Image (cartoon, rainbow, N blue to C red; front, side, top):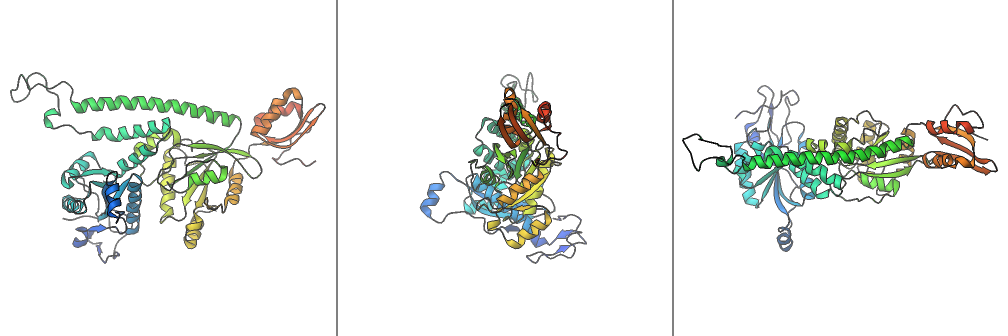
Length: 489
């Protein structure tokens, strides 16, 4: 069997880590290498304590991971498999083994090819697995054919992520979004109960049948599809209703000229920990993938006392299922309306550049690609200093922090303040007591530099929005300064 591997330009004369050669003239990998399934070391999470294994077997699925390496480096392929292993563990599975096959492209029938599927079936039997997880999104036909060979349940990366989201969703909106994504994924993958129930048959069916051979009018699978489509329509209506409420909140913040900052980043990069460190929000922090699904909005202040909102968002991941992007679009679009995106990256990760690229890809998809970005490199207390320096050089203007130890948080607050848009104007006005509401608004939505109470009213010096400055203009004592800086008495 001949397997092409790209155009060979990037691999001409290359020798891989295991000694195999790539032939640029023919575009083929060595026969022995193409016929091998490569084991990924260190993926097994099987326990050694027999009693504990027996206990966990009641609630954990025993899985074997399989991936196809079609492009990039071996290190990149293994990192993807390691991430799949963490996803499987987060979902409550016990990883027994992990395998990678090098191919020019995935097999359209069984994902790994007929021969490799048979070998995979032998491995599944040998380790006693009950589930195979593929590191990619499989088509309905690939799922059915691979299952028919390995004789155990087969799921893909998309189904695994959807399962994790379903476990972690807590709010009504989060549950509705996850259910919508699951139904959109499930709809083309429904299976019938055999050929006899797979089609309608009315009157005289083919073959001269008559009484007893007429179809039921609507098959079981068609009924399921109709119900799923109806449920999808209702869920979209519910999510649209949640979006209306969020738009009202956003418009209120804009009316009060409160800047909006969104924390975005890869899953488990430390976004919730950073939100807690900056605001004391008390948001759930867990060393698990996708621990946060429901956005948390908290009030925060810059070092000078300027108010802004800080929003924690759902984490991203490589190959985030498009169903989830569609379902969570209303939530993710919070980023598109933000004044600043604080992009958190795990400095201790094996491939932080891939994290940055994955997050930026999703942000661009939801229309947030043009929002100003501040890269925050987290977990510096456990990262390699050399790798940190290289990452900081690639990401100019980034800030190094540790949400766990508090290192770099003051620098981050200063960087956020510098990156926020300056809309305020400084005014000096004598506000009569009958208009005390204007003073209250200056305290709530602006920065009060001086407030002195006298017999005729409140002498107010404050940095406020243009709209509030216009309302205070009738009480202004001196011309409004040309620059947004405090007035020196």
